[in-house]
Length: 151
Image (cartoon, rainbow, N blue to C red; front, side):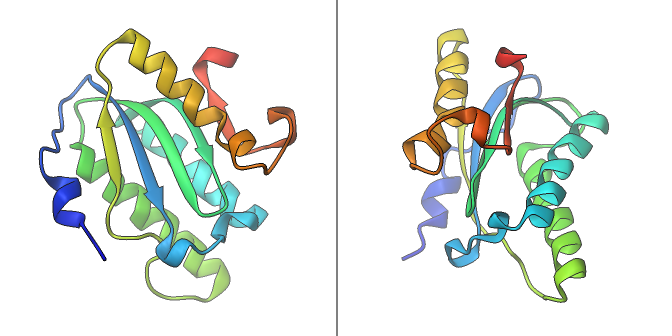
């Protein structure tokens, strides 16, 4: 049962604030077990950063979803950033795989960061996702994550 109206209720979009967004693939399909799909998707995160839309803090791309922490800059709203990300990644993946239609669920979950403690705790939660899921025993073995705190 979709509860998209509940996800949007209370959603805010404020420039210079930090957000954590979780975006899930349609039908939880493991699109990102495919190396090329994963690389395309990660590149789209950084394209939005290079365009001055966001500043990525942390992300982890799991086989069927993305956790992404970023600072929203003043170029687009939160929903516009997500729409651009989903649209671009879908188009590129569909082009190489001869598919049509969205690869993402229409909804997404967002959390506006409250303070510095929340910012760091959310980054830790995000990058530990492959460990909690049992995909790897060490983050060194998982290629699709990054955090400004671990440079």
